[in-house]
Structures are given as C-alpha cells and as structure tokens.
Image (cartoon, rainbow, N blue to C red; front, side, top):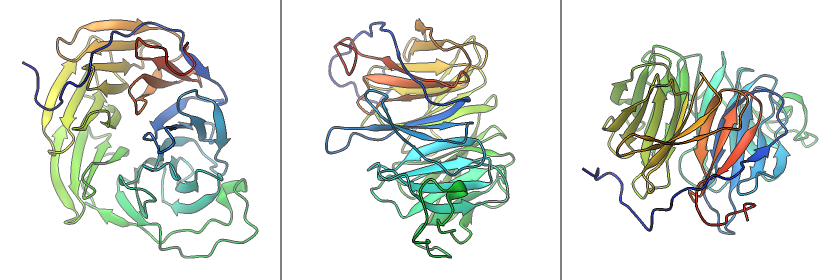
Amino acid sequence: MVPTWVSYMGVLHETTKAVPLTCHGHSRPITHLNFSPVLDDDQFYLISACKDNNPMLRDGATGDWIGTFIGHKGAVWQARLSSDASLAATASADFSAKVWDSHTGECLHTLTHAHIVRAVAFPPQPSPQVVATGGFEKKLRIFDLSRSTSTKSPTSSPTSPNGTGSPTLTPGIEVGPGVHGGPIKSVIWGPDRNMLITAADDKVIRWWDIRARRLAEKFEVEGIVGTCELDSLSSIPSLSVAAGKSAYFFSGSQPGQLLKKVTTPNDISAVALHAEQRKFITGGAGDTWVRVYDLDDESELEVQRGHHGPIWTISFSPDGKMYATGSEDGTVKLWKFCSDPYGLWR
C-alpha cells in the first residue's frame, strides 16, 4: 500500500552514479549540514558545522566556499540558516549559541548558556526574531532576538574573538522545564510555528506546544538518536529520525504520528528522506559508506563510497537533485541524485 502522507509528483528518475564533489576547508569532523530553501534568484546555500569551531557558508549547488563565521571557541555542533538565508545560527561547545548576518559574517547576538549547546533552530519565516536552543543543560529555550542587554560596539568586527561586541540576550524562555532526561541533540521548528520538536539522548522525540509551553506528544525510539531533521521536499513535510539500526519517519503536521519505521542491518547515525522519489539515504558510525534505500520495499539500492570516516550528517538540497554528507574525515561531499546533467556534473 502506498502511504497517503506523501504524493507522487512527476517522473521518478533512476539515479546514476557520479563522482561526488568534495568540499575541503574544515580541519576536524563535520557535525551538521543544513541547506537553505531556493531563494528568489534561484540560488541556495549550504552551512556546515564542525568541531574546528568555524562554521562555513557555501554555494549550495557547487559547494564553493563563500565565508567562515569566526567567533566560537569550541566545537560547533549544529548550524542552520533562516528560511531567507539572511541569518545563520550556530550551537557550540563553548557554552553559547550565536546568530550571524549571513551576508557579512558579523555576529549579531550571543546567547550564553551554562553548558554545551548542541542544537539551534529558527522558525520557518523570513528574518526571524526568535531562535530556539537545546543542549547539555537539558533545557529547551526560546530567545527573543529583539531583546538585547547591551548595545553593539561601533568598533566591533565580525572576525573578533568570541564575537566581541555582539549583544548578549537576556535569558531565554524555557519550555517544559525538567522534562528532558538527557542532553538535547536536535531542535526542529515544525511547519506550524507554534510547534517545536526535540530529540534527546534519553531516546525520546518530543513535540512541544509553544503557546501552552507544554508537551503535546512524545515517542520513544529504540537507540540513541543520531539525526532528527524535517524533510521539506514534499508538499506534506515529514520528520526523519536516525536511531540505533532504524530510520523513523513521522508526520510533519501530526505530533507523534509514526508513518513508517525501517530497520536495517547496520547502525544508522544519519538519515535523509526524498519523499517524491520514495528513497532515503543513511550513513553510519560503523563504516564510511552512504547507503540508498527504497522507502516502500525497504531494499538497499546503492552503496556510495568516498568518505574516509563515519558519516554524521546528511541533507538533501532543496531541489532534491543532490544530497550532502558530512563525515568524521572533515570533508563535505555533494552527491548527484538525478539522471540529468546538474550543476558541475555535465
């Protein structure tokens, strides 16, 4: 039976193997990748988080380096772009999250925490004025970016250490205090701006009603969560979670509704879904391979080799014609996912 949660659109193309594009520049393991949506000029962007402290912005289609956000003094665990790519947010082991101007690289806000910050998220709107964070404090917080406790120094530089001169925000509003039983590994702002999703090391995915500041639903997975990301390629978004040897696919609009669970022979550290092609991609901590699966019959379709370390993060481009992987080997690779010529694959 074909699930009703995604609609098939267009012609399903078989993927053809092509040499991946390798994006160098980082010096330590890649921890997170995030693509922007396609913007008005048909451009889109890719931001990478890395343990070398320096998140990078790239051209999404080619992987060409655009700039590096300088200021963190610890590993950066997660990085995201706003829906209009005007802002970037990063979560770091230096006990802070930062919000950046993605055009200039300037640090606009520093969000101080009492422990390592693992996750950060913007609501799905242009020029967002709030940001959510989570991490080793086991607290989900929402910060109002319009409320700064200090004024930026006119002499501040976007490359100054630790974001010197950027305003520090007042403590954020905590949602659901005392509920998380482990560090928060991922925060997702759902299509509904009043719903936040968290994935924590207590093996529980939680859906939060922001207006009521209460837990709306929860689901316990079998294994430590690797990645937890929203699939935006379909007209009906879904949530993809990697945990243990399984990939979980939840409704993006109905909190806690499990649409499908696929268990594989291998540990899965990262997963990304292409709903229209009805395929999903996985990476694991136990090897260096990228695996492509059929969503319906759960068969393994392809194995892609190229990385020299475990794969921790996977993300599809907003047009669905390629995907990016980030590895322990310190590289980002772009893989073609269509049969027609695309980007630099000619």
